[in-house]
Amino acid sequence: MKKGLFGVMHYLMPQQGVLSMHASANEGVHGDVTILFGLSGTGKTTLSADPHRKLIGDDEHCWTDDGVFNIEGGCYAKAINLSEEAEPEIYHSIKYGAILENVLYEEGNHGKVDYTNVSLTENTRCAYPLEHMPNVKIPAMGGHPKNIIYLTCDAYGVLPPVSKLTREQTMYHFISGYTAKVAGTEVGVTEPESTFSSCFGEAFLPRHPNVYAELLADMTEKHEANVWLINTGWTGGKYGEGHRMSLKDTRAILDAIHDGSLSSPKMEYETITNFNLSVPKTCPGVSSDILNPRNTWKYKEGYDDTINNLANEFIENMKKYSD
Image 1 (cartoon, rainbow, N blue to C red):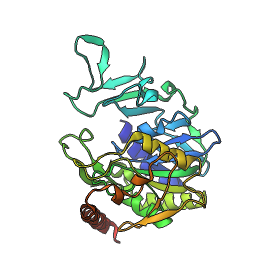
Image 2 (spheres, one colour; image 1 turned 60 degrees about the horizontal axis):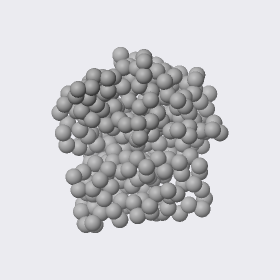
Image 3 (spheres, one colour; image 1 turned 30 degrees about the vertical axis):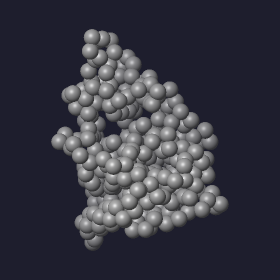
Image 4 (spheres, rainbow, N blue to C red; image 1 turned 135 degrees about the vertical axis):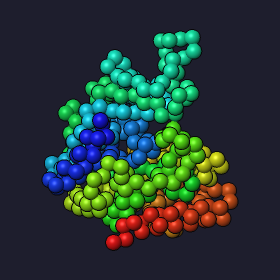
């Protein structure tokens, strides 16, 4: 029902010049709004629950001439390996009135849920109203976004932890909608595989992706929003060789975006080949060693071959929209 209504909104909203978005949103203490696009498994729900920012919503929003608003009135978070230490906001939102799906109790203790048990499925979920969150904005509305973030889980470990996008890259990566399907996201997926989902929500789009991409580019330019690509996937090598980007580092990157450090005129950037991505040379709270992904690979030739292969996948996918 949730996604069915989302499809309806994607049809109706562009008729009114409104951009419907598969994205989360939150707001800082100074009223600055951030939009986070991303497919399942990229961290959209987790990263939008920021203790220093008010949550507007975690999955479905619209951007109008007056700002953004949430469609759902609630959250639908992945619950696999959920812990109070790692994700306290989500953990404490699971109380009376919330709904848990596909989870099991701890053995011998029917009063405590075992979030590590994946014997039914890795796609465990919890649904709860926005009011359950400790730091939420009611009504769920905000001003125009200052920052727009594309989240991708790159299982090949070749995309940088953060890069700043141009207007053309804003449209290109929006239409591409790249991430990797990982175990627990879809039935039958046991190994990561590349997937391209236009506008980070192709299944919900009744119109051509370019309709939404042009709306996004126009509104981004009109309201002078910065656009960033953040990789929450692998670093130091591809899946099975490297390791998953730490949540601590990703949150530090988001903090640097929000406080203006990464958009400062004094910030120095370098360009990643193949994708021509602008990558900051430093980031507060993050080791500079991981910002350029090539530096994290032991065998540089392996990195070069892998990023070439991924670039070719992007090119092949974009042929669908060559007209």
